[in-house]
Image (tube, one colour):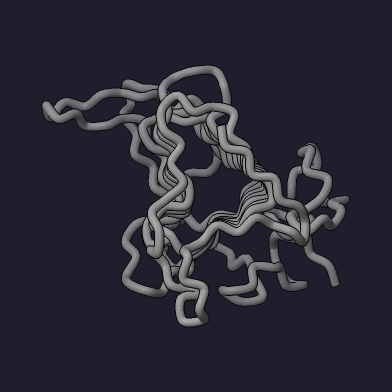
Length: 258
């Protein structure tokens, strides 16, 4: 297991070894943190992971142990994917993933995922991005050309912002013969406007409104953000990523403060 234990104001930074200014924001300088099958109980607290290909690749075999718990962490500037889960069990809280060439989060070939008070803001500008911020998938195609089901046991997003440059930032790749369980609870979402949100998969969501960040680099909320005071108060995240107390919680990783 990997244990990364930074602290507020003393975060652990993972990046390429070229530290001169020109490389400060260049993606793709290193490959990934790869949690290979069988790796369990990995923990990342207060980290900044940037400028790679894939931030975290969690590739697992089925078990009841969490693959990864990640808290108060920023993943940014990845040429590919922020978090790639392959049938994994991932819990993320107060986490920001931004500027990825493909997905911010790919919940691929099933698994179990819980994201609480996360901000997924994909304003990638190095090339034309064609994949949305979030992928939910419950199957794979084998080398023999056949489709194999891998149940998506759960993909729960609570008090999360999902936004980006594309017209829709969530992709649903479902094989109906397998489980495909997902829920967006008190989230601000950029999705296809024809999506039916009057069902159990959506609860108190805000769709296709600008989150009103300070700007595409600074993901703090402005005073007119529709995300302010719209979070589910039953969550256990009593502070935000910067240690600010949540009373009537905002949606996303940052709590608004004057």
